[in-house]
Image (cartoon, rainbow, N blue to C red; front, side, top):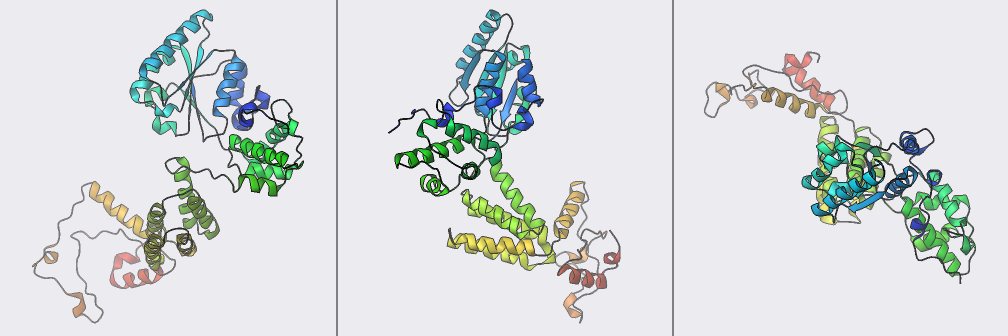
Length: 421
């Protein structure tokens, strides 16, 4: 049996030059901003922001190699303030020895630094004693000290699409030195694209899946990688999802906007993504309840009842059956007529209150006040009566679904409901 290196394929296949770098075309294609800066040797202090496995650490090492700068590495999770001071002193020493060329200080997961740790680096970044490159999976615009952030450029890195990963997987399978070429395993582009698509845009995951699948085929005497052998080895697709990170907010946002846009297929797809990622059912239910009130509202007053019933039923049932209940609710809401009139009405009233529009309660509406007319004494169950000292218009009925009937009824009672917005 041919023995391959114990070093993971993803580590062995790290690019040795800019042309081998995979993905991030908006930054790394010929003429793109970051590549141009690297080739000119003028890389600014920057933050590489993106999910795991999209090439952040690889890019830092390529920058150091291509610009011929010393690379000092430190991990933000374990670093102490004293270690940071040592790093700063070492950077100054290297700059002096290098004739004024600043070293690169690479801080992995920069967002873990507290303000004190970040402040240690500030003077050196400002004076150019070092070029700070931080990587982070959390949005630096919220997590990084604003004073430090103002001295750095943020480059956003994205998950890789399957076609972007295909050339790398081909090279990894055929490369006899760094890759899997010694195994002599063949695979069609279609199979490699399936591996790429199942990796969730994660380069490391794609190479790990390829290595495991190819090793399995070789170990069982095979010569061809197939969809079946891949499925047997690595199972289902890798789902990129972080309940505390950007994916959490992006996917729930996509589901709510799909409901608002009346697309039940998109809404149920994003629901399935949330469930597959292990999202808390109660969080999903809260968002469904809010959507029923905010986006469907009085166009279908039954929508919030459906959402509330689904919330109770899903909580009582639990997964996996709760997915069916949530699917029913999401499809119902997406298919229902839409109105945000209740949302706009309360916001308009709240805005006036915040500006100091605090009307006194009319005397006849107070407990025990005289002059109040009891609406049920009239056959219409309505009587003309003043309910605010200065009547104001906040609610404008929509024209879809049940709200048409609400508008027609109110126009019979109040003249202001015949006025245009």
